[in-house]
Image 1 (tube, rainbow, N blue to C red):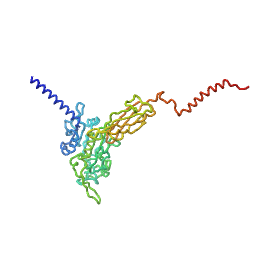
Image 2 (image 1 turned 120 degrees about the vertical axis):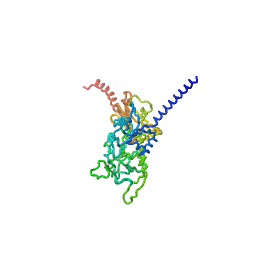
Image 3 (image 1 turned 180 degrees about the horizontal axis):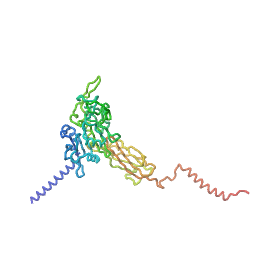
Image 4 (image 1 turned 180 degrees about the vertical axis):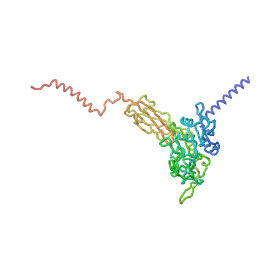
Length: 444
């Protein structure tokens, strides 16, 4: 009897332990983002430790592999093993395991995020992957060179470029606040012309150009001036994000902790020292890339007649309609109401109404009231919200608008009274004319 009781207690304890492990695993999966980090050499873990530690502090579970490792795989049995991908392997000749350019592009197409860092030498797989995203690395063995904006510790080739706030894109949701001068050593990036989804996050000075250092410039550099992007950000139409940097050293501990001393010229040429702003900028860029910043969600879309709560089967012309939607922003820890102006359109081929939604105080609800135009047909409620740095919102819902029924028109219209009078006068004149015609005789 005692052994049976002991066996039951052991079995109950095992079940409780299993349930606890499953719950903990579920909570861990919800709070940690699985991030695959590919490196040319595992030594990069120590040279870029501050950056990786910042990712872990933001809830990322980092999995480090050499980029050519035969054990690499992004998915298994149709499910992705990771949420994000970091490629700090500019010189990998071929990705290992089942990883390939196509699999990474599919990873992006399915809404996942990628961070790529290049260098003065970039292998063909990394170069081709960036090119698929609209970014072209500079030629091998080339650096961004600036003879007027460089650090005093530069070795003489002027490739240790110093950048300021004016070189950073004016989109704080992507970059955060720039806290100091930025140091950069690497190659430049050319961006696909006309690509509205691609933005230069960090740009070079007008005096910069991309060329091999310590060589005579014989030809006009292909990349020069403000057209040289140093860091570029892509947000795809499915809201997947890709960040491409022309410098791996940009994320290094050395640059994070560097005291920058930009060389100045002229009579007042005293070089000033300041702490590098690389750490704050790099961490903010990574947070944006991996969906910790600038993420919006729209929910609870509803529309109905003013004074009612349910949407009718069809609307009638000239009715008063209310449209509402809840829009929230992820602040890194929780969803909060989004407090920027959003517009809704009421469209049939062209917008008949384009109105600003008004946010209710203390709520995530944005709503507006308007009158249905005096035109019947198939209309669409449309919200298209695209702002640099934010995930896009695209909401569409078609509704039918019908004309008034015969018994919904006004009985008497004020502007038609002259016609009513004309008709009445004709009705009165007709019998008078008939009587006059029948009974009037001309005198002989």
